[in-house]
Amino acid sequence: MSKTPNRLVDGYADVGQWVSWGSVTIPPRRSVRVVTRDELLAYCLDKPGAWSDEPWEGDLVAKVGNKIFAFTGEDTVGLKLGANRDEANEWLLRYPHHASVMAYIGRFGWNTLRMGGAIPDDEILEAIDTSYEAVVGKLPRSQRP
Image (cartoon, rainbow, N blue to C red; front, side):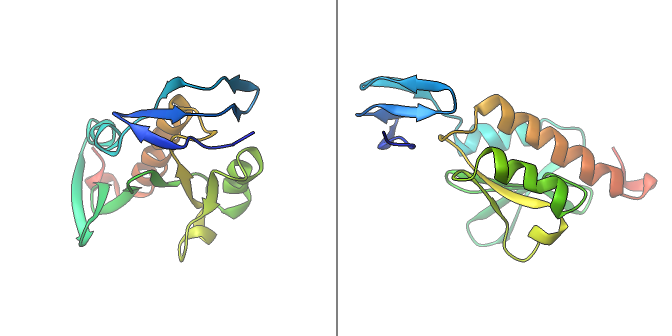
């Protein structure tokens, strides 16, 4: 069984073979809705005080105050998922093929989550909420929304 969709077609995973995601097994030719980068960014920007930035060419991030709370990629999102590495490692244990430690800042509790795989969209959205709250909590009171 494949663990990932073959390709995305109009925001849906085209699963041309049996796919197993957690306890769910999807038969061939059934589509599963996948959150797009634009939808993910829009969700981030709906947060109080959130704004979009492009600190590096082609890399869109969501910020609150002057701090990043989400790095958006084509099929990934980088988020602060724990106060430290040990807390963030829970994601790696639950989704070993779809969650990874972010380069450079991973030791501070940042992970990359792959969309359209084993991690349900609602858990990714909850992870965005967690990241936002963690970053807002570290802002000086004068910069908090």
